[in-house]
Length: 342
Image (cartoon, rainbow, N blue to C red; front, side, top):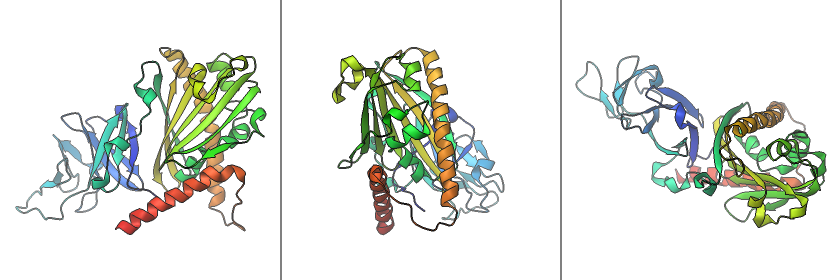
């Protein structure tokens, strides 16, 4: 399985978890989740160790889950506390429990070795805590595509001109070179498009009509969280790299959850520095993003189908692929390290 288990993954928005049992699949693992009486989200293995019925088909009794088949009951730690009709509880009567963290209205689950978990590694951006910025939960894009391909798309500004010609890109950027930085923990790919017509997104969001300088910075945090920092400013301002806050600046945060080999959920958040109290603008940006992300979905799902067909030769690599190549190598190194530690 091509997954990094020792990492925090998004199970959903905080608003999705209440007192009712709900099931989640992540990294081909099935979880049952609910909020306990203290308001904390609990995540357990969704499979009774007796006859394998998912516990999500049972019922909650206080802070315990009763299996819907023979009534075996489990507490929040996964320990079996009751076997109806039996005085002794087998030592093997338990389910795995998972560490959960909740931040910025997002629920994260640690899917690997609990002794290696660090809450400091739960993803965050400084702007999420800054009152001068608006953080808005968007939607959840369900893709019939491998998460590695989805993540590659999110460290690849070169595709924007061709996949999003009327939304997030234009032909003006087709031949603009890209820069790649792979020395740090985060893979970053970026470029500026100088003195060009504003793209469709910023015509609406920023109100630009005359030519602008615009930028795209793609930051990929392993294993699969991406931040796209993009924006525009009037040409006369001649903004420099460190002055991007002076333009209309937006962060599109993509929180990928690998569900299984050919299925990924991309939950996204946008953060902006304009009209921070305008919910109408938030809704309009949601609409624009949905149009653009549907364009990505069509491409990525077509790639998934093509990759699953017999191939005559290996795919070629070109100059723009440095970021994705480094990403694949680092993911494989993390997977190998986990396998070798067992």
